[in-house]
Length: 186
Ligand SMILES: C[S@@+](CC[C@H](N)C(=O)[O-])C[C@H]1O[C@@H](n2cnc3c(N)ncnc32)[C@H](O)[C@@H]1O
Image 1 (cartoon, rainbow, N blue to C red):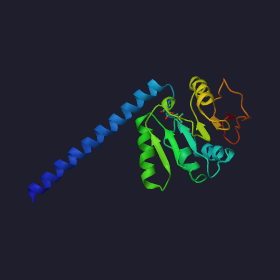
Image 2 (tube, helix red, strand yellow):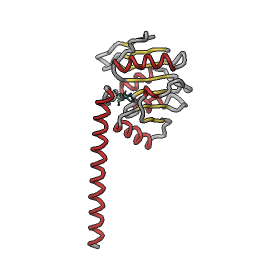
Image 3 (cartoon, protein in one colour):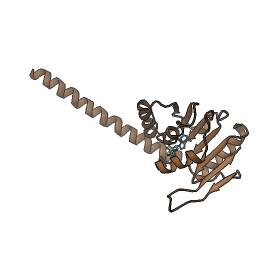
Image 4 (cartoon, helix red, strand yellow):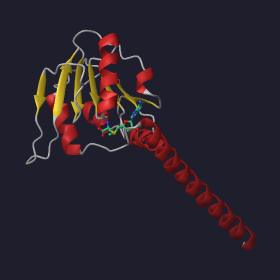
């Protein structure tokens, strides 16, 4: 009995140690990738996500992409509007793992890639959502104009695409705590 208890205690100690190492590694990898990527993992509030998903008027046959999808919150919200698979690209390990874990508990149609979205093929996208940074938005402007089909809609939280003209801009609303939202069409 004593031997069994000792064995269980040893296994538990090793499991806790392993979990601590894995957690530290994930945090370390996230900090490093945030430094390298220029755009850190700063999730949009659930209120903002719901608001943009409604503005975007997502149709049943829309193929939705989130570039830099964080913990996948826009994709999970958009999933209720479309029958198509929703695609996310997220390069940082922590938000990628969070999306994967959330996906285990929900019956959602989300496919998340741990990959730089600048290397992704966006030619199937009907709707693209992003919340990134000014420099990255210019690169996205070039990429979507080269790659996406005519009519692809792009919604950007906070940051404009300097090399494209927006179809519509909803200015920041301090009372409702909503950021500036930009809508573009390829
Ligand atoms: C500001 S967060 C937004 C997260 C989410 N879209 C939201 O609105 O809550 C930006 C995310 O983009 C990711 N990211 C930045 N550049 C990326 C790249 N080139 N490829 C893939 N992910 C990227 C970051 O790791 C971060 O999680």
